[in-house]
Image 1: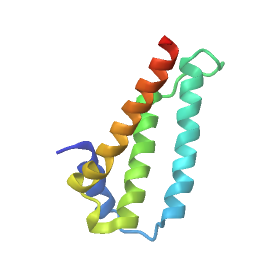
Image 2: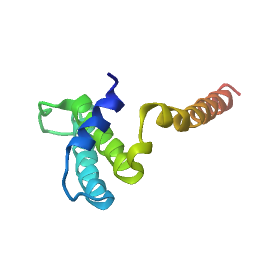
Image 3: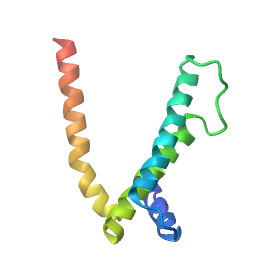
Image 4: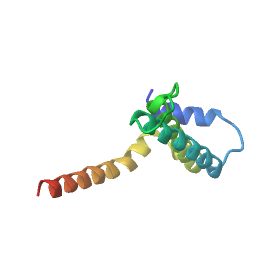
Length: 106
C-alpha cells in the first residue's frame, strides 16, 4: 500500500466532524513545527530536534493535506486520480527548475 492510500484509508476511518478549515488550522500548526525543525537542523535555533525531526513533521503536513483532499473530494480522492492531477504539476515544477538553472548558467 502506498503512503497516499494509507492516509486516505485513515481519513475514511476517522469519523468526526472535522471540516476543511479544521484540518487547515491543524496543518498550519504542523507546518510551524516543521519550520521549527528546519531552523534547528540549519543551526538557527538553540532548541534540540524533536523526536519526529524534519521527516516526521513533514509527514504530518502531508497527512493533513491528503486529509483535506479526502474531506473535500470524498471518494474521488484515490491514488490514481490524484496522480493524474499531480503529473502536470510535477512537469511544470521540473520545467521551472530547468528555466532557473538555464538562467543561472547564462
